[in-house]
Length: 399
Image (cartoon, rainbow, N blue to C red; front, side, top):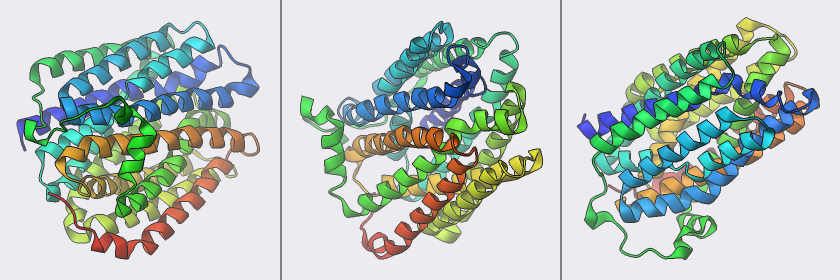
């Protein structure tokens, strides 16, 4: 493995560590400035505001990375996260919580830039595996972060936010001195216009490629379902099982463990056997089953059932994401990697706007309804992939 790849995996770990530290405390921070009846709605709105800003900014940041390189965009994105965490931690009002997430969202191009970086420094046949390792690195961060957040919440609800800001700032310092640029001058775009930063214009270009129409539709639906669970999971556990920050943090620790196993180990073993398309299908099947089990906890409250459903869901997620990411990256030439990863981030951001809002709406009718509905969405994803197998087989993939 190249030194640059090792570094980007470490950066992914620190990135997820900083982000997931705050997850156990978000509903408890919001409820300080919101009535009990509106906590779920405001949590969903805060999550969606971040996603909306990321949608507006991510495709443009991807284009900028195609022009100026991955390194400066990655460092700027991390700096925005530091500012966002600090403002969120200071809090004091609901609008301050929104402001913190908006700032982080507008500069939130780090994941798409990381994925473009990986595509720059790896061969097409190895991308799915490296995306899996990146997911595993994120899984370790996802495992450690919530545990730290749950413990730090005993000091104060704001402590996890300030820890996240500190960790991310150290990541910036490390990256400034150690991260080499991955995009060669010959592979950069030569012209950059203001119109190129328009997210809708970039998506129009990307969707001119037929295969990407299918891959992005599946990605969009998948993340609508996934973010419906993620946005309300802490509140769901609090309401149904009466869990506090420590217990929520512990189950997120379990999420990290399963993610490491699925993306860091199983993906590398299964990709050569099944290939990216079949592995994506297997991941979707497991993911849909996980949603069904997760939603059933509302009707059969059980800590054991919550653990089982979470494990199945994350296992499916851990197989699907590296597989679909490899297919997306291999669909275009090197000078389009920033744009395609920015577009992917933008598509996911739209999903993160819709998912939390529809989950918050359905949650008002029945706590388990958002997750049972998400199982149906995953079934639609499977149908789309099934009807598109001939298109996938005919596509010429790029080195």
